[in-house]
Amino acid sequence: MQSMSELLIQVLWVLGGVLLFLSLYIILNKATREYRESRRSRIRKEIEPLILDYVNGKGDHLAELVPTGRGRIHRGVVEEVLLDHARFLRGNARERITAACEEFGFVEERIRQLRNPRWWRRAEAAEKLGTMKSPKAAPDIIALMRDEVTEVRMRAARALGHLQTRTSIRPLIEALQDPNRWSALRIADILAGMGPEAADELVEHFSTLPIRVRVAAVDCLGRVKSLKAATLLRSLLADPDRDIRARAAHALGLIGDPNFTPDLLKALRDPAWPVRAMAAKALGRLGRPEAVAALTEMLKDKEWWVRINAAEGLRSMGDRGLAALVGAIEAEDRYARHAAVATLEGAGVLDQYVEKLASPDAAEREKGLAFIRKIVAAERTDHLVQTAARHAQEKVREQLSRILQPGEAKG
Image (cartoon, rainbow, N blue to C red; front, side):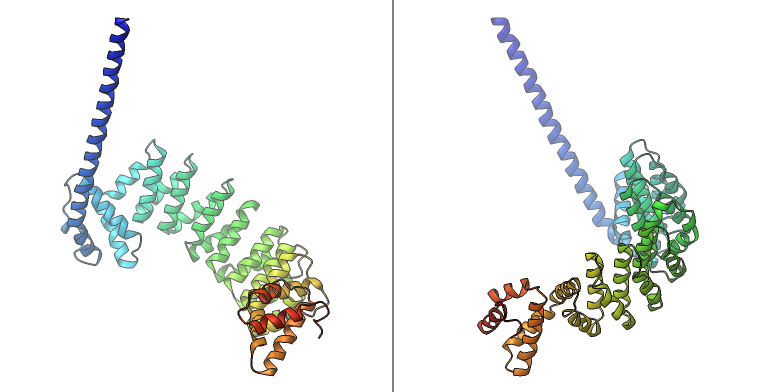
């Protein structure tokens, strides 16, 4: 019994020692971190004004203002300040930051880090090199696009997007072929942010891209809004793949050249409804008056998405389009009536006519009544019922309630 007690006491002493060690370790570790953070804060307070002087044009070299060789923490703070300001500066100031990163050896250090066995270190290095925007790093970042870890490849792709050099565009186009759909979409975002040069490369190499990659490539061309892509996009309206035809129509709308109107009017007759829907949306963006009649006809399309895009396209065309929607309220086609009413509600037109019911002008009140009767006859009264219950003016509520009674719409 005594030996068990002794053993228990020894166990307790061991546990106490372990707890004491852990407590001391935590305290020491926290104190060390706080000391380092305090020291970094003091160094940053000292050198940041000097770095900003350099960025704003003082001196030819940062080393003339901020001494080198003062320890790892000092170098880390210099790099941190440069990268913090690089994220929002442009023009000459941005170029001076890149020069400073090369001068202090930060670019070479991060290039070496790209070969670190830990994937998160490689990803961090790629991200920082992208912020530094040194063309010297391009070949090594391109090589990292073949990394086995997806996140590393994506960080490398973003870094290439920041470099915006012609040599970095082709690897990104090749990366569009990643079998992961979300990766391809993220690469497409990066390419779209690189501007006209990326569009030129996409047009040049489009025929070599796999079919599944071409949809993302077409989206890039539209978002870049390059007129140089117009010939390709027009030809893609006849592509065998309906998704490519649809995205080509959408891209033409994003570019916004009114000369695309005849091509998009033809696309409204496409047998595939996604193509008709995107063509209707694109025509709304172009806003050409010759498209009003065709979009009004598309309000009768059997596919809901086509009808809604046609109605929204008319809405975006101003008074001419709104007039077409008002006229469609009395269309024989039930789908056209419902699409027109829903869009007019969303545009606030219906509420404008409801307010006329309280006008002191008899002619204005009659306009309001006539329009609301058309809405009731179109059998889309949900919004009117809610307004009749909640409108601030009692006179309006009474008139709406009366119009909504069965048999009163033609009154």
